[in-house]
Length: 281
Image 1 (cartoon, one colour):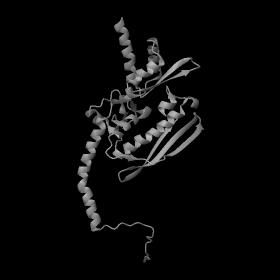
Image 2 (cartoon, rainbow, N blue to C red; image 1 turned 60 degrees about the vertical axis):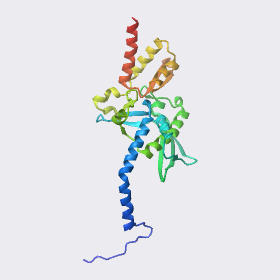
Image 3 (cartoon, rainbow, N blue to C red; image 1 turned 30 degrees about the horizontal axis):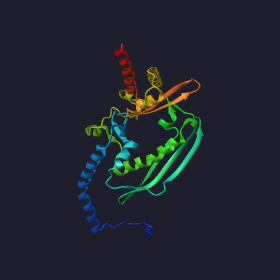
Image 4 (cartoon, rainbow, N blue to C red; image 1 turned 45 degrees about the vertical axis):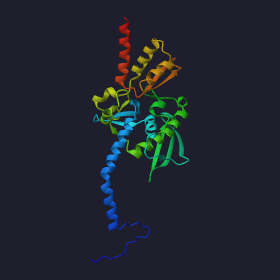
């Protein structure tokens, strides 16, 4: 059976023909790559050198490996020494969404921009939701929507755009914790989360979020020491942790929430206050 031969329609298609000049261009790029890699490694080193202990958050996977992600404050510090400035458009694309499901009402803010670094332009997106851990959750439960600060959620989405742009532009994503430790950055005072979810390994259970019972115990101990709410929040700020205190009108008591506080850290805080109590005796 003979096949009918037809011309292939190529209109509208960009077909690159490999020529001697294009091969030479690729060879020139390949020759520069080892130097480019070395320069990038040195640049990462300088970025890490300006980092402080609270600038990175640690995530622990099911396999027990720890990777670090850059926080907003760390991104701002790195911005001050960038060799090539990031260029954002005069106006950012902004979108607000809201809805309701069986858990109640929610809303989110999204910022988007095409960011330029040298000769490269790439898309960057940042989204913050009223149900994000710090804004909308207290002791494992979602807050009522009216108790969530819209301004804080929107600010987080806006500031996240800069953080994500720096991470994308310079490859600062999922940095192994060992690299930060080798640079002298202490991780013990940083927030750690088990990215494996509730089904994570038993070996990382101490990195699970502090329990409501632990938070209540910490609150009770601090109140017994005549610490007011401002003093309690300052206590956690010094540990590079964000604390929030809300009042439960039904129970008539203050509720403590601390972003990134894990079980081990909470246990250590309770133990330290108990030890101080014993010392006084």
